[in-house]
Image 1 (tube, helix red, strand yellow):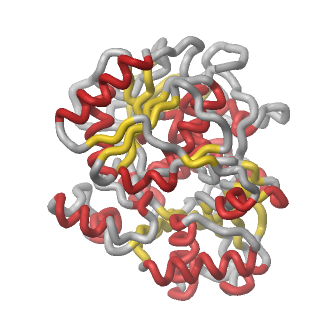
Image 2: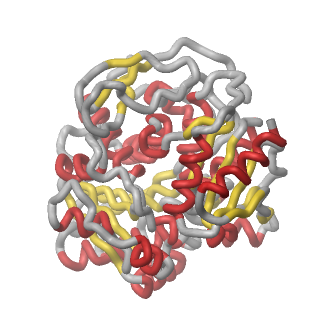
Length: 431
């Protein structure tokens, strides 16, 4: 990993009790050690105003609001522009698109074709030079791709655990680094999360932390920073498809900072979030206005998640009821949390490509379908300023250019305690 070190410019604050922490020496402080219930930490930055670093590469243009020890070169950032053709088809006057992916003529050059590249870059930039433990990451596909690419680019030790069904989503545009490891488990995303948790407790490993990692959230939050640079103000409505909801929490947190800055408006930014039928636990919990996600058997959850249009949206353990989590974000921001079917999502993806000229990943198609429904039902007005976060796209274009290199797992395993032991032997060989 490269880059010049500098003094840290942030502290960490417990959302639940307000306790303040200096960053851990290993850059991996994930939780408050007080005796209260589950909570997120939040980064508090020295500058209360958004500062732009014109020379900063990629997301490090906004390094003043990132928990990063250094800037990592050669990284991408989201692009934001005002839609004309899609907006006209939807009957909207002020629609802005935030795109993370491969769309060179629009200036989008994120080779992983996913906004997860933003979080992977930020997480690695939070770590100190010489960090030598394997960072264990569970993924439904796109997060793993982003972390493997970043680990290969910067020489970081990363172990990604995915369900076997996600392997087609795992590819790189460069040679895989020797310490960028991939494990496939015979199960769904929840099984990958369970195995990753077991591996993270082993000597020589650390949990990446998921939504608990402030770098992951603030990396994703750069989408909103790019947006206010382009628009000049916060949007009235923010639209995104969600699985864990980490990206939506990130947008909410950045909106709080921007409202505190005062130059981009002080009004609320409503969150309009979408899931994919028939697995929509966040939608169901929000309808009940409950911090608890409705109970569902593992068998039923596996059946439903196997049917969704966008597997990356099928998260069985989202940070919903935790203090500072998605329930709090929705309650503070207002808005809507709905779900769309596969047919509507596919038609929305076709509409977007027809209007704007780029392919979208399935989750982004879900977001477009949800926006179309919200406008048609009057939840979003035709003259409202709207930011549509397109969380991935351009992979078909990248593949057509011959840039995609499929990955084979370093290990494939079943579920249960024996799986962790088998992968542990792989780790011993690589350390």
